[in-house]
Image (tube, rainbow, N blue to C red; front, side, top):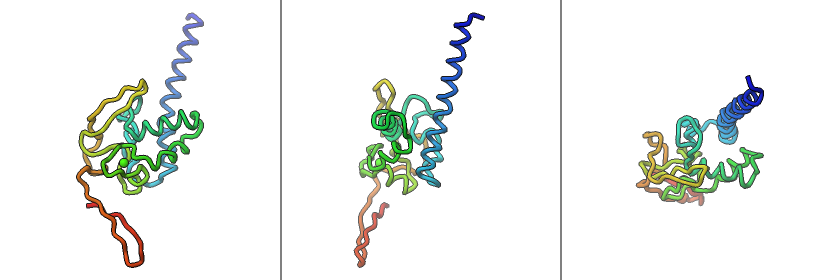
Length: 160
Ligand SMILES: [Ca+2]
């Protein structure tokens, strides 16, 4: 076998292997930041459009990806995850932050019905994409929320 061909095969093999390892590493990091929350049940689709991960992210995944590359120079995925907590990455109409959705057991990257945008590495995007799960674990656009204030001046957000 030609030596250059052998080197090429080895490089392709290990670069593929590394990219396969990267995705579970990112999901593990996410689970470290938010242990025991329902959103992790989505696996790769917490952030990616496809069940198998890869190119194509929901707004939340793309915000994390952009932060990871542009703010933290690919050095700190945990910090990147925390950095986007206060964004409304899925653009839900109630403006719930990512961390607010995560704490409510909702998916921070998906809204109800086919109102989602999927973003790709090359800067293109697809509008009006379906969420990956039909269960009610994302903000419903018709959801009604209001704030109540107790006699002790404590506030709570109630959503119906
Ligand atoms: Ca949101």
